[in-house]
Length: 100
Picture 1 (tube, rainbow, N blue to C red):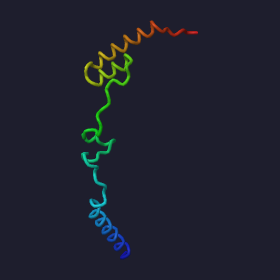
Picture 2 (picture 1 turned 45 degrees about the horizontal axis):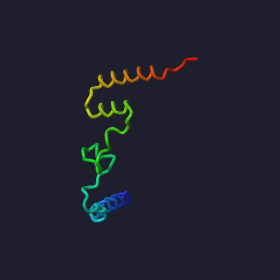
Picture 3 (picture 1 turned 135 degrees about the horizontal axis):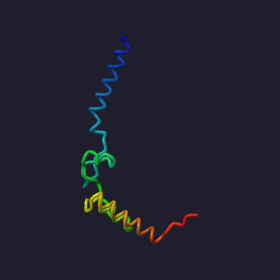
């Protein structure tokens, strides 16, 4: 039992020493940049991204433009569905699928 107590106290002591020296051992931020942000956790905890956001229209096709408008809030979900239905009807007229 005494050995277990000694081992626990040694582990606690090592942890405290590691916590004391952790600020000295962590790498510093490169000059000209803000605090280091994990790119996966930044958006979750509300931090701004390190680099500018990409252009919302990545896909120049009509459905890509509609998707960008939906994500930016220019159109509602119902308007998006109606516009996608019109695109699907137009595509079906232009490129009919023959059934065997």
